[in-house]
Length: 196
Image 1 (cartoon, rainbow, N blue to C red):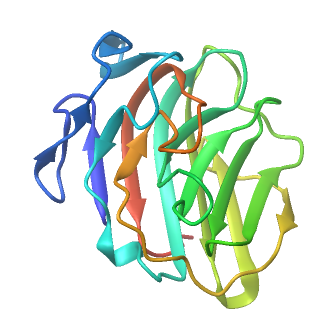
Image 2 (cartoon, one colour):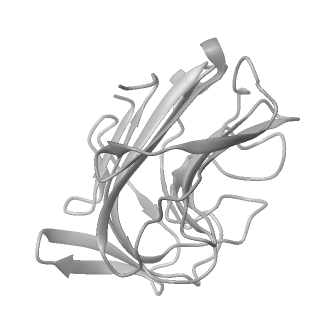
């Protein structure tokens, strides 16, 4: 486990460092029937809610990202990852404009993207979304509410992620992207291995 951020505390419980919120107008404390959330308007500036960079992911060959969120309808919704322009992003978990969960990993020049074929995350409903990748065997996985879903790979198989210094962005892309979550996010867990 490399990062364990919870909206109830606002800190990453692995590094024990509070998240940096540079857009307090658009990222505000929220609440649902399960507890605290980070409520995002979908209009926050890039890389506006972050926890520290994960050095264990530099040059890494596998990962899993797990989130619990409630997303509104609209364009692509980033959930968590190291985002940014080509050469800076490492990996991310998102919901695309068709509401299909996807994961992506990069080596700085090429990307491997794995998107759900049919399964969608319903708008306005609490959902667990997880995704992961492992270079060995070019293994890609997506889970929706705990169940694996079939997906399609695009891009190119890669052997390792690049070494970068960007922090982990929650609910927004980092530099080089303008997409942002519209909805609530409760927690983010990041592992440096592909879980079953």
